[in-house]
Length: 274
Ligand SMILES: C[S@@+](CC[C@H](N)C(=O)[O-])C[C@H]1O[C@@H](n2cnc3c(N)ncnc32)[C@H](O)[C@@H]1O
Image (cartoon, rainbow, N blue to C red; front, side, top):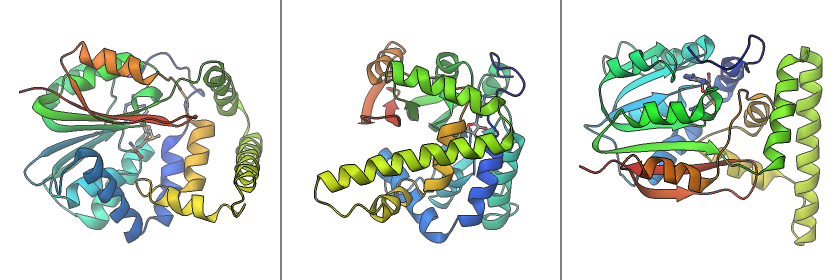
C-alpha cells in the first residue's frame, strides 16, 4: 500500500477520470495510439506484453490493446480501476489478453508476482505514489531484457514546484467549493498569461489552437488535465538528469527524451539491454 500520505491527502484521480470518459471519442483513442507508437518508435505492439502502471482512465491500455499488445493494467484508485474496466467492457469485452486490477505500484510482492514485460508504461503515475524513487526502482525491475520502460515524471522547477506542492496539499484538505474555486482561478490565470504571451508574439490571443494541441497530446483533455494538475497529490518531481542517472545506474539506456521547460512532465523511454 502507498505509504507517506495521510487520509484526505490523496487526490481522487479516479473521480476525474470517470468524468473524462464522457468526452472520450475515436479521435482521442487514435491520438493515444499515435503518441504511443511515436514514443516507442514502433508501428504496432503485436506480440508484446504491456504493463500499464496507474492506468487512470484506461485510455493508454486501450490504445496498447488496439495496437496488438497483451495488456495488464492496474491502478491504486478503485475508481480509476472502474474506468479502465469500463473501457475494456466497451471495446474488448471478455478479452483474455487484457487484465485489469486494483493494486499499488509500491506493493513489492504484487509486482514480483507479475513477472517481466516487454513494455512498462507509467505515465504521470510514479510521482503520485508517495514514494517516487522506490516506485521507479520497483517498476524498472519488471522490464524484460531488451524491453522498454516509458515513464513521465514531473519536472523539478525548484521553489515553484515546492509551492505547487503546498497548494496541492491545501486543495486536498479543502471543501469541494474551495477546490472548484482553486481550479478555476489557476485555469483563468494560466489562460490570461498564455493569451498575453500570444499577443506579444502578434498571434491570435484566443486559446483554441492550444486546446486542440492538448487533444493531440495522448488524447487528453484541457479541463481534466487542469483538475489533475491542481489536485494531483501526493506530488513529487525530479530533474531530467536525476531520472537519467537513477536508471543508468540500474543498467538502462535512454532511447528517447522529451523535456518540458515548465510545470509539466519530462518523458523518458529507457531500454534494458539484452
Ligand atoms: C495522473 S494519473 C495518470 C493516468 C494514466 N497513466 C495516464 O497517462 O493518463 C495518475 C494515476 O496514478 C494512480 N496512482 C497513484 N498512486 C498509485 C499507486 N501507488 N499505484 C498505482 N497507481 C497509482 C492514480 O490513481 C491515477 O489514476
